[in-house]
Image 1 (spheres, rainbow, N blue to C red):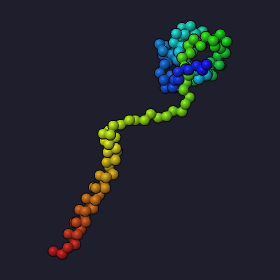
Image 2: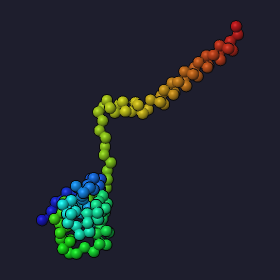
Image 3: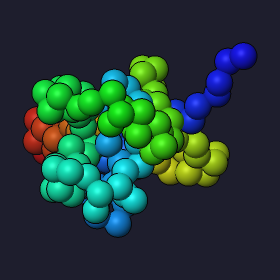
Image 4: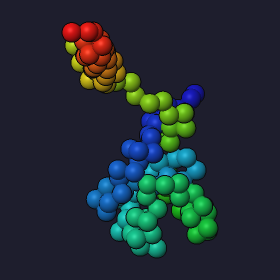
Length: 133
């Protein structure tokens, strides 16, 4: 029967990197090792330096025993979500959307109107200067 595990983003995992709240990631699996920090044979600094990133290589390089790998299962809390990141959509009310767009695009119409008025004034001056008195 399939087992459902919680999925965590790297952003969420990276928030848990203190001695009071320490998560590590090994082989795409997330472990909350906070309670194990004092018992880790290499010291808590080793685990704390492995937080917020994929620590598989460091874990494998340390040559952990079979019993260490079995012990890890006690601290397993989920897996890294490997699905592609989709940016969150911003939701606006009609009023917010209108004011947001107006504030972005006001300069172009204002410039066109300003240039038109200036051209009209210059044209009127030039025409009045050319007329015989």
